[in-house]
Length: 102
Image (cartoon, rainbow, N blue to C red):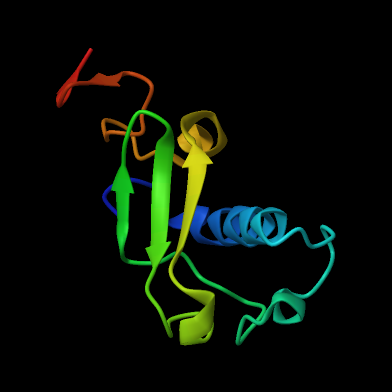
């Protein structure tokens, strides 16, 4: 992931991932994730991620952040939400297109 974003991105990405998980679980914006069965409230960006036309996805396998019964979780952060932390010349940089800088 460090190829995609600047080192300063970790804290804001963590906050956005937690906000997205709260929205998926219909929790209030300030509710602890443990109210929805997550094992901890400080969920970090996963090393299992991918990019598509919608944004930067972080995927969490069963048992990684919650019990097996909760299943897998995937969180999409739209391109617009992560572009301010894009590594210059990387795929999240608005100037990057199809592997070649514009």
